[in-house]
Length: 160
Picture 1 (cartoon, rainbow, N blue to C red):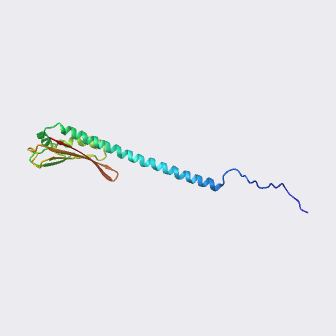
Picture 2 (picture 1 turned 180 degrees about the vertical axis):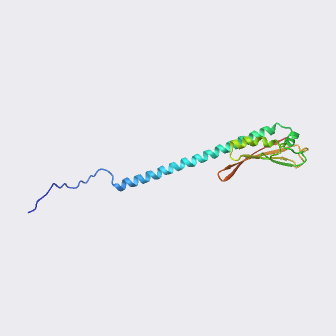
Picture 3 (picture 1 turned 60 degrees about the vertical axis):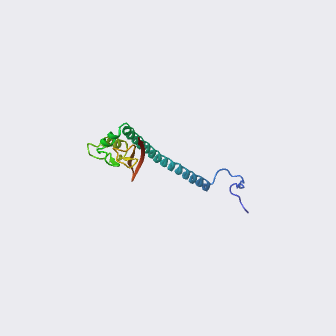
């Protein structure tokens, strides 16, 4: 004789819910997507900082060029401590010569950009000495450090 202990139900063909493997796969995919989105935020923040530094450097170069732009030809090379008897004049804001006016922009560059500095190049457009040249080109290059790299932006004008 056989005895049945307890009731046995037949297996239902319509089971509800998700299996453990389905849940783990879904969580893995969700984690991957969330990590990707977080990585994009980090990259976006870096690009935003670079753009901010680039804009600041461009504004500094524009400020320097605007100030130089109001000087007459003679004042342009005299303020950079030159007699005007050269075709090209290179100065930096890190120059410690008190007769060189370029050093006055260094404190502002230092406080707005990491290791900020500027190089100013005044050159004759026709190759003659600046004191006889009809036109001079002024090129301002602003440099700054960004982590392990030196970044630069350059702005120029021609004065007639």
